Length: 281
Image (cartoon, rainbow, N blue to C red; front, side, top):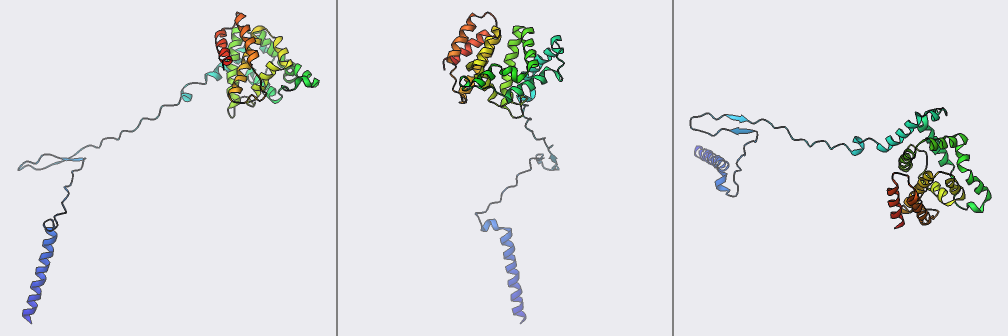
């Protein structure tokens, strides 16, 4: 009995030794597995080991992460609204004139003419079938006086007569481009629809009332109003919104001849170049 017990104990010890040997030297039994050497941390470096010298670990300082620079501000954030400034400067100039002060305009000329633009937009002229309706014809003949009122018509005529040609030319350029922008963007300064400029362009070029108004004006005003009316209808053609089907070619030829003979207007060459480009389309 004792002999068999010792046999069992010896076998258990031998089995335990084999298991320990397998785990300790498994690389010899399993050649497919290789120990992966542990790479040192990039933050810790060791000095080269020398016999008899204590190895000291040196911790490398953590370098700050490079952050991408913020994007540059947009052009609209850096550059001021030059077009708006030009418009406001013109009206600020008017506010300083003695002939304007006599009108006692509440809020100044800028706010006053915003109201005038809103009135003109709310009551556009008749531009189709004018000659077939005597009432519409008479209405168009006095359209500006009827919609703007006597005082605003007088104010406008005073500005045209007191300001020199160069200032009027510059102001009309800025006001036209500003009007186009403000009527196109949501929440613009002018309470007018995008089609308002087009309706008045057709009025000046293609109605008895509009043509009669132009003929009563001085040459530079007549030329500039005709020019911007043609440009407006050309834009409508480009956008396929020339709803009245106005052909600008006859008016182009007449205006080009007027400009060639007229000795004023600082931007005359630019007007001629643009009109010829429109005619070539």
